[in-house]
Length: 293
Ligand code: NAD
Image 1 (tube, rainbow, N blue to C red):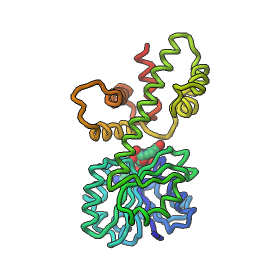
Image 2: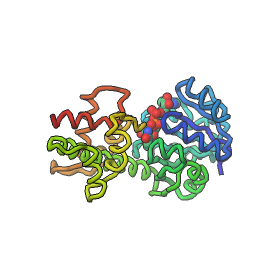
Image 3: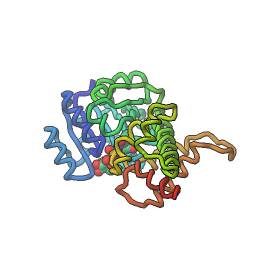
């Protein structure tokens, strides 16, 4: 069981996750690219803020990553040399929503250096990160999963060993593909109803007691969209990144109609047209409403 943990990436998800590791008794060091961020989180949690994650990694039993993308993960682990700095037998847990092919490559490089690697992306958003009730879908070897389990249990309440290296990251991209499809479909249906004079509150009430109900109608519309606050805490950029991964792992479909492929196109277009780096993913609704006129 890892005692000393370096947590890297203290954003919307990483900050509450690090807090739960700290509460669970881990000997915690934290790093974020933003100096203010790591100082603030370290102070709030009574953790050590490290100025250089590569140097700090040499002292750790485990390193947990909650970073934006595989590009960032690879840059840190390979180009900056974090993997090489780790001591043999230590464990890397990549909880970011990364690309499964990158993960397989990293796990192989890590193994050659005697470093254990698992992918363990999460679902449930900031709300479940705060309560420690994330769903966690892990990929990697049985013994490494078992070694990571005490850490994962501090962060999530539904923990799955999905398969080998990359299985967690593939599963996460596919989950978000389905989730993005459900949200876009709900937004189109809601916009169509508005044209027919149906009030959004009325529509949601009926849908949520009918077979059309999904997570978007039950949670996202009710909490973040009807209020026009668009503040779920999951960025449009990150969702579009996940859909890009999903698009790459979908099987060839020989040009036949495909609902999930249209999902990817719709979201990429919404991202381009709305063109706001700070945008929450629920704001895809604005683009769909715009198109409905
Ligand atoms: P975020 O943008 O809020 O946080 C990312 C953090 O990483 C930032 O604090 C940033 O400063 C830091 N960072 C960026 N580059 C870095 C580097 N090179 N070294 C150290 N720190 C660096 O993102 P988030 O919402 O916390 O998401 C993190 C990951 O979790 C993403 O892969 C995302 O797709 C995934 N995810 C997010 C949610 C959600 O609801 N927000 C849910 C599930 C999964």
